[in-house]
Amino acid sequence: MRKWWLCGVLLMAGCATQVMQGYVGRDIRDVMVRYGPPDNAFDMADGRKAYQWRMESSSVTPTYSTTEGRTRERHDGDRYQSTTITTGGDVSTTTCFYTLYATWNEAARGWTVVAYEKPGFECL
Image 1 (tube, one colour):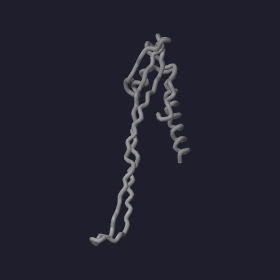
Image 2 (cartoon, rainbow, N blue to C red):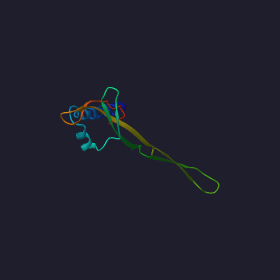
Image 3 (cartoon, helix red, strand yellow):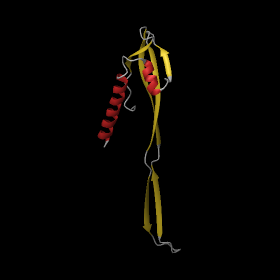
Image 4 (tube, one colour):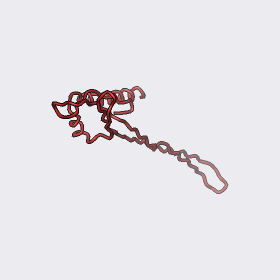
């Protein structure tokens, strides 16, 4: 099961990389039209500008309840005792930053995407 999960993560990370790669050579405003304004934008030492979009995803593990019952003679006539154990229900949040690098394009009078950072395994 773990192998299938890892394959799924790798495929989704690959999809994110393909999407980001698809913006290389295009105006950064094309990305903004699709995903909204970046969460961060800052100048790099080499003259490029970095644009970052922050995305959060949350997941909840399923909740399972197990009830175990026993028949037991007691002096008060009670003959049944049960125990319920509940597990799961944990919330996990992942924060990912998707970063595109752009250089000024005088002809287009805007910033053109020239590179990107590959997202981590946990990022889709």
